[in-house]
Length: 151
Image (cartoon, rainbow, N blue to C red; front, side, top):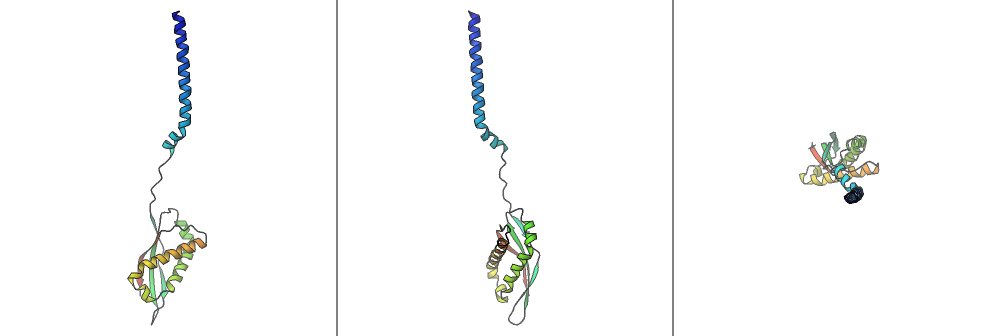
């Protein structure tokens, strides 16, 4: 009789262990996408602001008595880390739009330091507009004048 009890207990333990194993496997199967995502997904990298300097250029500015010259160096601020090839390709368009913008300005307007912010905003609008017109990515956040000399 002890043998029967022992065999019955063994069968019961095997069935219990098998059903626990199956239940655990099913539970892990349902939970594994969440577990795998937690281990396999990378945290989103922090967006680093990058500055893209443009080559300096000289623009002729009309004056009251004689023409003046503007030496301008600027940098474009963007969070797009892949913008440099776009700027290299669109450089003639950007330079042309800025030259048109500044050639319409008067010496008195450019020589006033209070106008610097509005000039930078206007340059940003011009650059983004010309990039969009020619179907380039236009995710530029800010235009910074790094050097501006008027003679």
